[in-house]
Length: 487
Image: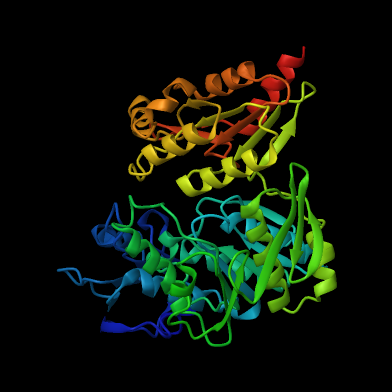
């Protein structure tokens, strides 16, 4: 039990009805989870408004309510605290409730459209190899040193974040690397956390179903850097025109990394092959097992971050050469028939273009590139024709299929994608709604030395159709079909 007044420390309060000198058992923002002596925080979400469930929460035993609007009926014995923004209050309360765990480790946030998962996951790998106890909060999974937990969101809610950070404190974790999404920033999930540093990867077309404009999407990302303390570092991609915008108002120490521009950390690609990259990082040559220009940026960001966190350069270079690719990020197999199949999470126009350009840079041009791609339902529709244009322009053959259609009709999504195909590329394309059949067809079309790219879902092991998740693993499915071809 902890005093309500202690949980409310640093929360901007408007009105208090009742006493804050009471002991509470837990904090919840979902009324279905509350119990006796809990605090209920009524958050206004995009789909539901927690204020509608205040009465229900009280009936289940809560003794305090945090809200933006006081209810018409004030119950005796219940403490009501009115605040300007319940989500902001929840984040600060969560940190206080768990003992401000972010202050007891070095927390680094990674934000941007593409590369967040790769950078955060590889930093976790690198620091583990260096002998540290490390945490990871990512799209793929949550790691509390060696303990693995399933990930539900790119950036979890503030209570979940702080619960994991407290677990990390208990396990003696020294460093934690965390993906920070635009949704997470906008919904104040990272408020109240003390960051040791922030990394900006890049910014391209995404999430315009949630953010009204690209400028709003950019400015939400920028807010993360605006809120960094002066003790932190801000590391941004100097080759992205938005990199300098991220640094405009930050109090943090500023650093840049780039392949093309002048920067504090520079990289040059010396060799680019399917088995890896030979890079020059600030005049130090290193061979890495990752592939493509986009991974050169990721490796450079990791190199810079390791130095900023105090690792010795020689050890960092050695450990970088040992890093293994992240699940669903340019993950590939080569069959006995010499067919290469690549599974990648590329679900934005920019990411898809990066992957296809990488494949085209490496291949000899005697092979076909067969791309299987779709777009998610109930998400930004404006990127669909762009995905269709890029896939058809940069591939030899394209199969448009379903991704996670969610509540939309898969055929309608595919029609939207097809609108981006230029007339000269029509003959390259076909549509197969069933994703498994689309992957099978790609395998059947492939000849020795051809390359199959299955884009969009990457690490995901499910397909979401009409609100239900069905088992579906791109990598396992293409692996099985390629084995069948060998028989």
